[in-house]
Length: 294
Image 1: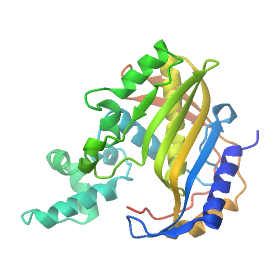
Image 2: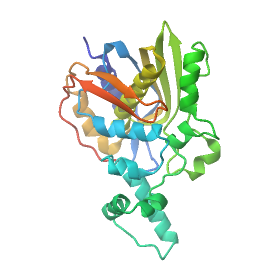
Image 3: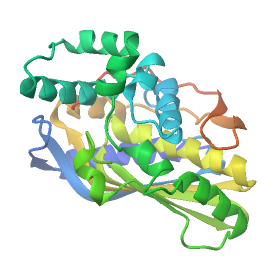
């Protein structure tokens, strides 16, 4: 079966390279950016994990489980080898050191080691504020994931199957406001589809990760509700390539995709805070290294 996902993603990379406007950004790196793009994938065509570069499958799963647990502290991530939030957490710690003279300054490695070794330190200095997991599982007292599963079972035709992470009243308390800020589910012909919305889309590093993560979430919801898998749709606002990712993007565009893998959820616990999933037939091309922009 043709791998349309990788080709659509390569086309999006090409669009940003060719049409993107040069803009400054929060990180100081600089970007090429377009506004208003979309990726669509029929889950019957395979699991949407890009094959034109090797993806960090376990890292993606760890972050999604962290969200579903309602956790906002990086200790769970660090303890499970997921380092994608380390830079944001460390910046928070550095800002605190600048205001509190009695605090001990650490390098990022020293800070992460302290998070691993000292639970009391981690409780205070590892928390990122009320970001994704907090909003998914406790938005003003509402467990949105629990409500979503219940409503999908009881009222499949509802147009209110929404989960929102953009809590305006708590944005200032967050280390980083949500990039992917909401998702909606839709049921037709006994198939469950999921569409997520993203204000800021780091096309080279972030978007492939987001595609796979929401695909797993779709499968988890199907497991809990009994529906078949439908379509996965991602809507992106500011769709950008960082200037230090341009050559990597060109390399990925030049590659020929392999067939998409398959993935099957094996277990989801009752309150949807943990799951197990098996990935098979994943044959990606080699990874393409690129720096994180925090």
